[in-house]
Length: 396
Image (tube, rainbow, N blue to C red):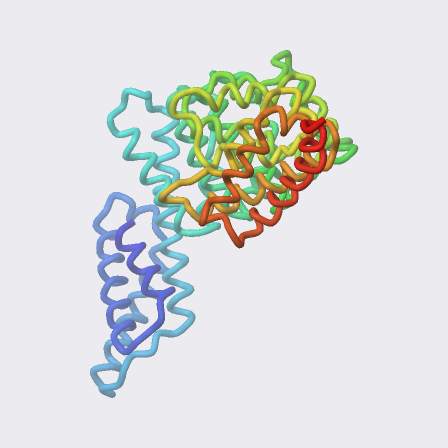
């Protein structure tokens, strides 16, 4: 795989006078390695011999004419074809091993690392790996790692579509509801990839819907309605999350649903979703800027008031992180917009005032890093609204 990576890098990088010679050298070494390996009986011998003849002809032309070699597109196509066939063989071997391994096997981590390495070779290899997946008898610890790998795979457009076409969404939802929490968390990560509203893989409309109460999947004339006894599973995962990573995966999955379907937002409110998320953020090692952003994304005005999320929202205005400073600026802006929406309603302005919102915003506006930003403009407007309403009342 190291040789294959080097060859792919040469084929995809800008070419110079040395590139063709280096490409031929690495290709020749790759073919020699494959021919002496145990995989040689499974490789297309005719294609390999064709490639060898092309290499021989190119070297002869160089020595005869003394000119730089020019690698043809046919050579590149043949080389890619052979490499992909070799990598698919690797994928089959690793997939077979994973089906028969246990979580105590010392080679398991190495095999999964190699599987992830294979995914980086492109869509076609990912699709081949996806077609080999079978997790029905896989131990839970291995299932977690496979789901993590599948989540990476679903970052590719073709792989996500292929998974949905194969009925993978139903499988992922089934794992979310029936597997232990650690596996359900990883399944939520895959679900979050498939339901990313920016990709439009899945649209929650009248014929295809998923709710927080049952997370049931329905599509007329295509799939049967799947119902589960485990209500509020995504919220259960949030309740059980002990790390920021697991909390983030389940919250992104939930946020993707709420961004498309209002009944889910109402259900989230009825089941104290925001309150449970706020409680989760108070656990050690659970609050990060990425998790905090998901709370802001929900933007549930009345739920934020009723379920005591205003202090968390106000704290987002001053969120800082040395590594993700630019990301924190985005969070501050989103929090300011959400608070401004709250302040535009009488009940929201009152709730902000009662939670010391005026003091927090006044302190924020005195910070040099905030001045002359969009956050400062929005917060100044909120401060003016509070002063108009409450300074007069307090003076009476």
